[in-house]
Every structure is written in structure tokens, then in C-alpha cells.
Length: 104
Image 1 (cartoon, rainbow, N blue to C red):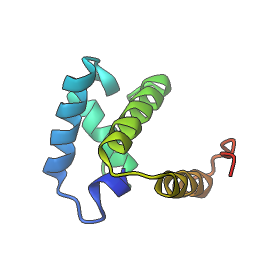
Image 2 (image 1 turned 180 degrees about the vertical axis):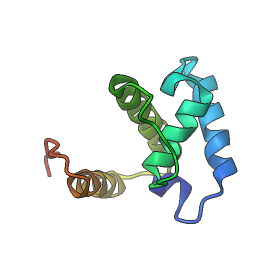
Image 3 (image 1 turned 45 degrees about the vertical axis):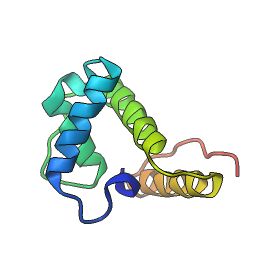
Image 4 (image 1 turned 135 degrees about the vertical axis):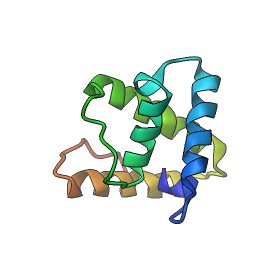
């Protein structure tokens, strides 16, 4: 998400992306538009959003779809995608997770 929005993003861009994502998928990702926006802001590292009321399976699905949608909209090459995967894995480890590593 940081690669898509940049470091100094405008929160209105997150709101617009959430609305666009919901319209494009036709699904109720993140338990509604406000929930989806909260998930996106949480993924961007904001600590003042609460996503604990959103079930884990809903969070995981929303994150996967949002990440894929953002990647689709970014100019990408294999090198950029690999860098994003490494960055995501690093963040998960920093937060105490233990994901399976992507093949390098």
C-alpha cells in the first residue's frame, strides 16, 4: 500500500481508493466502506485506526484484493514486485508474524 500511496499520502486518497475498490469488485470488502478504509489505513501504518472488530478472514481477503488492485494500477516489473514482496515479508516479521517466504 505504501508503494501505491507514497509516504506523504492524503487520507482522502485512501477514501477514494476504498470507494473505487468497492465499486470495481462489487463486493463488501472489509465489512463496509468505513471498515475497508480502516484496513487500508492500518496497512499504511496508521495506529489510530481500530480494525479489531473486523473478522480475520474478512481482513485477509480485503488486504489481498486491495494489494492486487493497487499492484495492477502501479507501473510494475518483476524487480518492483519482488521488492514489494520482500518489504511485506519484513513488515510481517517485524510485527511478530512468521509467513512462508516467497521463492527468490
